[in-house]
Image (tube, rainbow, N blue to C red; front, top):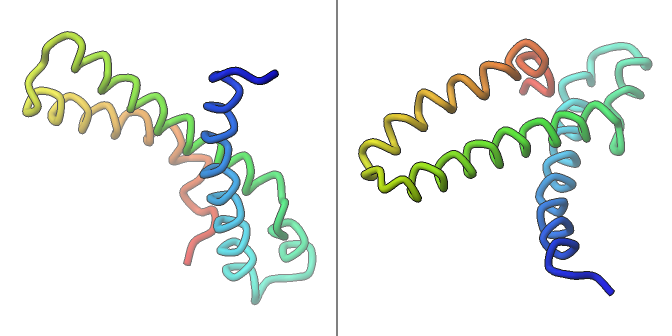
Length: 105
């Protein structure tokens, strides 16, 4: 019998799956003028789209947890916004080299 953790994991997976589908479709569209190998690589279910969605989801969860930590510390909304803006640049900066050119419109 599944517990709360199982349901929370399933709910968290739904947006990642939806994002992976959108990324795969965008990558396929971006590759429409490329050769057949590139089209096959960006087909729905492609591991690249699933990995990209997972990375973006992990970045989002990391920042959300950071916000929760700052809130528990009693930081003001202004402080949280300032800190998280810098943190978002840091976290998404880590993904830039891998995802900057993926599924470009």
